[in-house]
Image 1: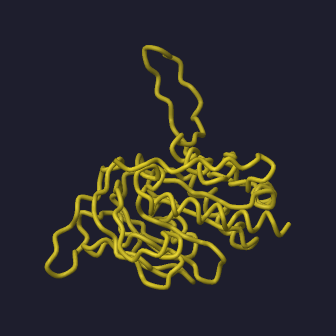
Image 2 (image 1 turned 135 degrees about the horizontal axis):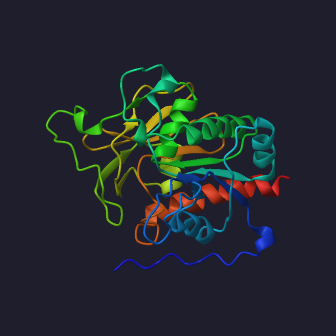
Length: 265
């Protein structure tokens, strides 16, 4: 049985501040609460726990379209984390094909695209998972495959089951040697990853490089090499950092990059 990573007992004043983009959940009336409640901006406990365990101080951002407020939040932060969630709208890259709007979240699209651009302008470390990696690519001019089950696998392979397996490894991922992702994982060029997605990166955005694929060919990792730390993975290391050392390495590498920003202030 894998041993849980040791909690980093850093003093609160020494921890780098990690600005976490919120999820947006619509609360439906039910027997317990028949009144319609306002939507809730939330963060998954496993996501916050991973940042805490890696030595960071997570603070959740409010959703806003005010670019001045976003710039101020980025200025206060030492790193930016973007979690998974709803699909990214194909309209962002000019695809007007019919798509189920119930799967989308335009509020998150608008906020996260602005947040990414502000973070890159300020050269803050960015770590993005699943939807976060997808919106990172789209914010930089890329596009997505919106139906992974229709993805054409590499010769001789069938598609892995890409959803939903969160608590256990779902498939191997091949990582490009010499990439930031390889270093962040602890020097590994093949790792195991969980999986829960039906969209993935397609056309790469400006300055974005594809640095990892599942062994069936599905894109699994992107980065922006011109930045000190700008990394997106298609899987969910917030669910497996306790059991997969490579996933905990991702969180530690990200928080360490944010700590360098804090130290340079």
